[in-house]
Image (cartoon, rainbow, N blue to C red; front, side, top):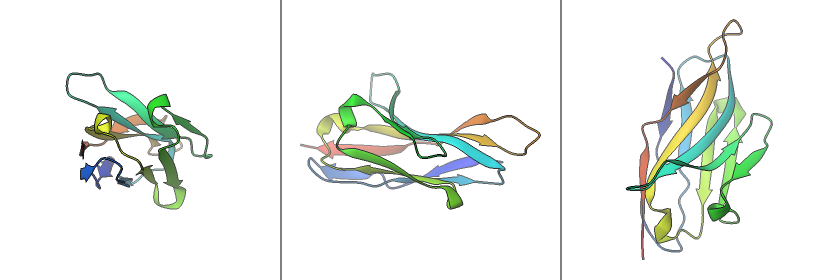
Length: 121
């Protein structure tokens, strides 16, 4: 069974930093897009940042210049470096990936269980 394993959330003061990793667990043939999303209480889940297997990246306007997504393709792991955190960054952060078990099959979407990030003012 393919899963995404997240960690590295927590409580941090405004202006602080976190770098949660997300790793693909289980046997996969390849991993395409990987990304981080977040959902604050009472709000819809939104894209924070994503990266392709080739290294192209996309960021939400609200995090540009503060967050950086990086990827270790050899270990199917993606990191979200979050700097200059603000209280409005408080949310549950979810990892997402498009994975493929075999060359015979198409890609399918996998989500992590989520990790809480709380930024105090």
